[in-house]
Image 1: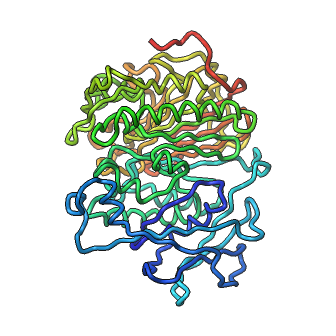
Image 2: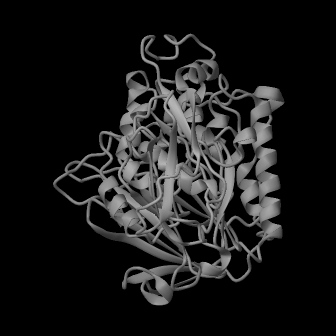
Image 3: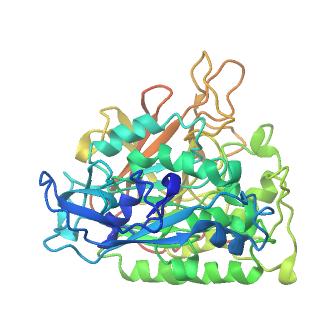
Length: 497
């Protein structure tokens, strides 16, 4: 979907409309009244100007005012600036084949067209293999002004090896900034990514402004009628990815206890369905913004409000964050101390990996549940084996009996900086026995932050490979394998207290 200044919406990967929705990222400022469309042809065939769909438009300003429940001025919008969102609606183009590379451009029939852009149609189930595995990029807390990982991400995406990119919250710092123009700046910044593959998003605490209205209106994710872009799921080859809204627990002015219950019930139903479908999608990954675990809990930045924030995320405790101090999130004791134990869902339905942002570093945990490291066998394997990326030794988690938690929130938050010394990297603080490795956690003195993002590859039903690439150091800083031969619920003695 395309909007003036580059604002757009996206569809779900795996749907015929997904490729057309990617056209939204092309910077064509088509007037709202113009007849507009999309030209979509097989790669290398720059012919045929008959549009395959129509660009529908809506006035963004009015939608934002309705979402925020305020006047335009109170919602941080200019009273004189009109903005539009354009959405491409297509059926399946004749002859479109799974995995086929295509070219497209968007514009108006009067002659104003974007440059040609390349992308591949979603792959079919039989097109995934150990040589061409299901591949996902993950980045968190990217922003606009300090988004130093973007050039490396563009290089990765233009290489054509990835099926989707998942941005796990804190998108632009912030979408509503400059009366909404910050969103347009950010979307132009990520256009080389979002125009070529599904750019999947989820809300973080920095999307909170005006009842999350800018976030909810600027994007279209799967399950929108129910989840309003806040929670949804999708499949990529053997991976089922569940995306959920951690912020529902922290902002009672935007979300009621009923909203929490709606999302929690949906998550349980989705995970139940994923378990019934393990033969086709054996891997289950969950993504949110605020993590349940931290690299240290005493004597460092995680100590400030840690119990309240991280335990609220883990146990699903309705809380209220201070707008000035978002880590201070005391419980509200709403609805007779209602709680929604999300970590319990992970354990009950055998979630393999949970990835979060919010902390501006990279952290890899041991398999953990209820603050306790779960049983697993650990070894090492050459990263290049079975299709891994680097040739260095990689850790292996063999048949773990709990979820592996990862923090990948180092895309480019404004608090991050380049120092003259390398980032801190290695073992975690002894106060967090569940944490196996960190890079960029709490840099001191001249130490640099570690700008980084994740590469995830599901090679087959039993082997998944993870790399963390550091833009700061221009190399992989961590690589590990998850080998799971017993997918399903983690039945065992690690009961929730």
